[in-house]
Length: 552
Image 1 (cartoon, rainbow, N blue to C red):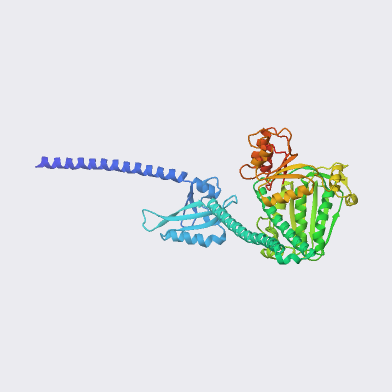
Image 2 (cartoon, one colour):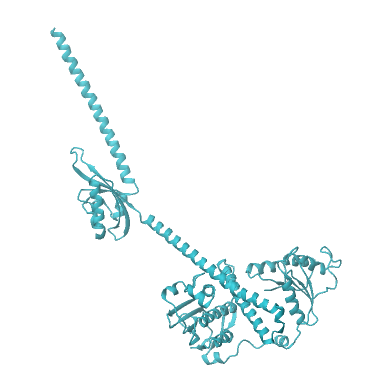
């Protein structure tokens, strides 16, 4: 009986040892797992790309990760340990952040946005998420808060940029819609006048119409036709500029001659409104500059035309001076017109925009002229700026870079006013002007498919003394030049014509193909292209195909 008891006591001791060993192993494994978990947590904590802060219940920093240090703009943990998060937040956001942290302390989810100021002064927009961490040995006793800080400044900037882009697109669409509505009116108005007065001239009962009435009707048709052509030219010019197809020349040109030419042109419009139009040259100016005279003239005509249009009483003045310090020529157009507000000036040079929608109804126009002028000025290495005051007037300044000016290339103010417009005409020009039939005896082949254009062009050519033969397309033009009257035939030894005028776009065979075929056959006659195209690419395209000249 005693032996049995001893054995049982030994067995219990053995089991206790085994249990202790097992518990030791379990504790060791649990410790290793805990250490592995801590290492995993620490790895995540250290490498997560968003700021993680451990705060006490009063909002003071106990620990943060490297991403958090970047948000704080701190070099080390010691630099911010014990600091209050509230110290880096504007006072206007304190109540919102405190409310979010208190919400987290009660176990509710918390997410707030606020601006955070780093230790170096950088300001970021932060999104904060907070959760409470309990002490595992004291249930319900809060020990600290775990906060996640995410810099959402880039996200909000992208959202702001997208919102701004959308608003600009919507504004652009509204402007284009208003522009199209205005353009429809601007095109229909002169078209109605042209067709209406043409119908009046065609009415049988108008047979007794006097000469003065007929001339008035014709003048009305011409005036509206010119207005319609101006609208079309503005649209084409803007299209070329926006497409990068506008070419700019740089040739020697006389400044004084350009000024006199433009002023003479605009004097008629100013006189018709009873306005005073003059020019003042304030200082000596360069006699010759290198620029594009056609485009520079276009800018000045547009600016002066606008000044006259928007001025009812008073004067319009072109003031010219040379800015020595900047080596720029300044041409200022001053008026005593209706003026503009600051808001109107801000949108003045935008395409499809007029200073005021009522402007289109009152004064007409497409709203493209100033946009075109500013872009042309920039292409000429210059710019246009405006200052204006409501009911007082406006000043548009065109500044052009002209570089250094040689000492002998200057005109004083008095000399500039005394120089006549342009150069003296050469003998050939004089002879042309004095001759009533400058094309006397010239034989011209005209290839054009538009009957109206054929009649008009042929009329002017015959009036100038030329003999004109007309064909409807390029194929017929080639046949006129061959011995057997076919496209495949050889050229005649003695050409029947002195020059060929051809449209570029025609049925069967266009001007391109006809020109190429004639050149391949050895035709050396001048071939002049008649075209409504205005793109630089069209000119290059035609010249590559050996057309001699281009007549727009």
